[in-house]
Image (tube, rainbow, N blue to C red):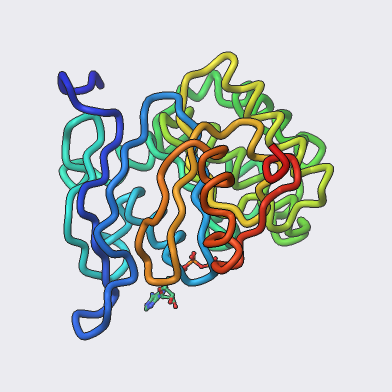
Amino acid sequence: MKSQPNHPFFEVSNLTFRFDPDQDPVLKNINFVINENENILVLGPSGSGKSTLAYCLNNLYPSSVDGIMNGIINYKGFALTSFEPGEVNRKIGLVMQDPDSQFCMLTVEEEIAFVLENIQFPRSEMEERMDYVLDLVDMLPFKHRLIHSLSGGQKQKLAIACALAMEPELLILDEPTANLDPASSFELVQTLKRLKNNHSFSILVIEHNLDNWLEIVERCIILNSEGEMFFNGPPSDCFNNYAKELASEGIWLPRSIGAG
Ligand SMILES: Nc1ncnc2c1ncn2[C@@H]1O[C@H](COP(=O)(O)OP(=O)(O)OP(=O)(O)O)[C@@H](O)[C@H]1O
């Protein structure tokens, strides 16, 4: 789909979200743009609304989860809510914090096949695509394994492979390295970096561990504990100008940036 002229790839305007009409909003008046092929890191203390923001961007509220959303999320100039859920899932890949909640099938192979069938991927090319995405995340040896027998990190890699299988235009990763060891975390970032050499897609990653991601992110968005956005800009600006605020929100600088 072509973008509407003069509209950014993704645009969030005055986004406010509450789970309950009687409660304070979890996200308050959030505004930002995601450009094509841009990589953005979302930071914020626990409970600041990062996962809620990811779900809003994936159009899960209010269609699949109860909540009241005000404001606008536009994709290529069109309201996200005007798209069919299947269409959104294909263009915007979401890897949730708890990968188990995303799986529908018993085996690794069946799970990827299920994803590909949902997007009506040609059956004759399915095996090749399946092996390609599993290999990208070092999961090819586990192709015939039962999902419940995988470790937490292996499940996370499978969820990422499922999202990549759809060749999303925006990939949202909610704490993708939470269950990975340092070597696997590093390798995941390198894999995404390599992929982006051949495919154009944007990444919005929610993380607490910044070190690995600074290599590929161009912009940081920081939410505070009130669910407000207090920074949106290049990582170097954020670390140079907001070190104290970040520390008070429980976000610490990687030494590499703090020193620069
Ligand atoms: N389904 C729900 N119903 C009511 N409140 C919810 C629901 N889901 C999340 N919340 C609340 O919304 C707030 C934001 O939660 P969210 O999971 O988005 O935060 P987060 O920044 O991703 O946190 P973490 O870093 O711990 O994952 C929290 O106070 C949480 O308790």
